[in-house]
Every structure is written in structure tokens, then in C-alpha cells.
Image (cartoon, rainbow, N blue to C red; front, top):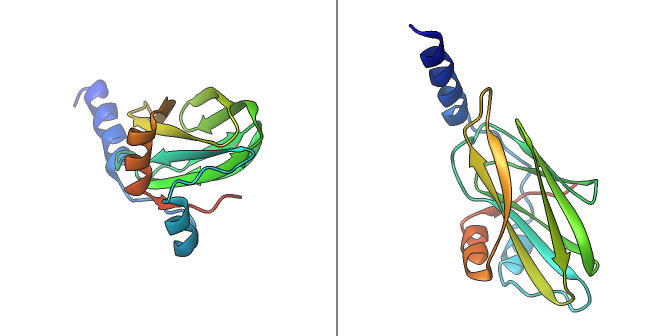
Amino acid sequence: MNIKLFFSATAMAMLLGACASAPMGDPAQDATLKTFKAPAQGAGIYIYRNEIIGAGVKMDVAVDGEPLGYTVAQTYLYTEVTPGKHKITSEAENTSTLEIDAKPGTLIYVWQEVKAGFLYARNKLQEVGAQEGRAGVSESKLAVAK
């Protein structure tokens, strides 16, 4: 078997392999957060991962250098921040960084796109619109933030 084919098959097996799990948030809090009500003074940030690919890989998420938690397939994290610029970082095989400008009384939706990597999954953080973000969060479950 050629070495490239071997590594490709191994990487794909790891991406589709055993599912990792994250501690799940309270179902009542999950339902409340899915009403998508923005905080009056600050801004709410949803960071969601609604894909199944890379299910076996936990991806650490931090906001402004402070650990928020980690995602696995079909989960999301939520946090509230003060108005202004903030940096979201996600760690997988790579590090993805997204800078946002939080306005008071708004919700920000960040999609953590999962991509195939060399050894395990890679990720890319992308800010998305409200309609796409609400749909992605709605098909995911709340993971416990640290």
C-alpha cells in the first residue's frame, strides 16, 4: 500500500472514529439559550460545531485568552462579553483565531468549521449571520463552559 494512501485512510478513520463526549449543559439552560435573547448591556456569543466530521476530536475554545470549554460534534458554547473587540481562539490540529467587535444588545454566531487534517481534525472559526447561526445552534446541544 502506498504511504500517502495509508496516511489518508488512517486520518479518515480517525475523523470518523469513536465519538468524543463533552459534559452537557443543563437542558433548561439549553432551551433558554435557544430563545436567542440578547443581553441588554453586553453581547452574547454562540460558538457552535454542528458537523459530525471529526466527532472523535475535542476542540478547546478560549475568549480573550481565557478557556471557555471545548466542543465535540454537534455542541455549542455560549458566553457573554462586554462591548468592544474580543478574540476567540480554537485549538485542534491547528489554531484558528477570530476577532469580533461586540455591540451592546447583540448576539454573535461563530461557526467552528471542521476540516480534515494530517493527524486529526483541523478547524476554522467563522462569524455567520443570525439565520445561519440560529439554525446551527438549534441542531446542537449546549456543552458546559469551564
